[in-house]
Image 1 (cartoon, rainbow, N blue to C red):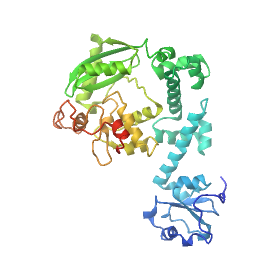
Image 2: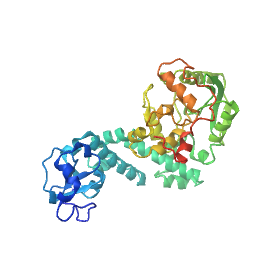
Image 3: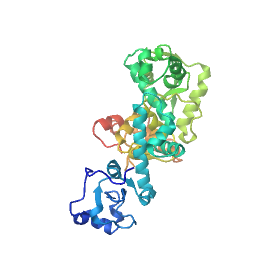
Image 4: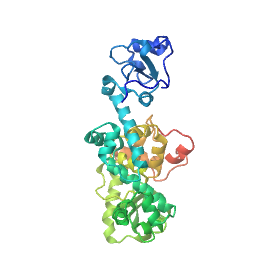
Length: 393
C-alpha cells in the first residue's frame, strides 16, 4: 500500500489546508457525534480515521476529507489502528473486502483458491475464511458453489445445451458437472433443461390450524411447504413450480413427513428435523441460510438481515427473497419484520405471520386471532411491496 495517495483523490482539502473546512473543527474537538458522517485522511502517513479518534492531531494542511471509509480506501489510504479497532469501522471494512471477494468469485471462470482470495483481501487464509463466513453466512467455497449453481441454472433455463452450460458455469469436464448436478439441480442437467420432466415429486395436502397445507418432497428432501385457504390452489402452485416433474400423490409412508411439518406449524420453535431441498439463486440462498439462523421467538428487520449477509442497502432484494421462499416456517421468513416492528408482507398472509410469531412467543394457538384466510386489508406481500416502491425495512 502506498503511503502517499494520488493528487487526484476525491474531496481534497482546500489549497490553504483543512483549517477552513468546518469538518476540521469536529476533528479538533474529537467529536464522536460526527463519526459515520465522514472520515479524515492524512497525506503524510497514508491513513484515515474517524473524527472522534483519539489519535494525535495532524497538521491541517496535510488533511483531506472523505464521506466514507470506502472512498478513503479507494483513494489509497488505509485505516489507522484506532479506526480499524472500532467495531463499526471494522465491520464496514470487512463488508467492503468480502463484497470485493464475492465479485472476484463471480467473475472467475474457475474456482479461485482460498489462499488467492485471502491474499487479494490482505488477510491470512484462516482470518479471511472466518471473516467471509461471518459476513455472508457461507464459506468462500459454499458461496462459489452457490454462484456456480446459479450460472448453471441460468444457462439451462435459457435452453443452452448441456455442454454450453457446463463451459459457461466453469465446470472443467462433464464428469465434474454430473457429480455436482444432484446437489445443485436435484436432477441430471438434461432433465433440468427439460423442466424436470423426469423428476418425481411426492406430495400430500392436509389441514392444520392455519388452514390448508401442502407438503412436497423430492429425492433430496422437502422441496415445498405451502399454506393457504384452497387445497386445489396449493396443488396448482406446486405444478407451476415443478412444471414438468411427475407429481405423485403421497403414499402411507409419506404421512410421517407431513406430521412433522404440521407439528412445526403448530409449534414453530421446535424446528424441523428433516432434509430440505432448497432451490434458489445464490443471493436467495444466502438470505434463506441467514433466516434459519434467526432464533425462534426473535425477529430481525429486512435491513438487519441485509447487513448480516454482507449486502447493506439490499433490503428490497431481501424482501423479494423472503417472498420467493417456498418452504413456509422451515425457512422462517415470518421472523422478518419492518424496522419499526411492523409485520409488513408475508407470502401466506400477514395474519398467519402474526399467529406464528405469537406461538413462538409462547402464546397458545389462536390468541393472535389469525384466521386462515388473508383479508383484503393486509399490506402487500414482500415482493409486490418492494416493486410498488414501499420500504420493507
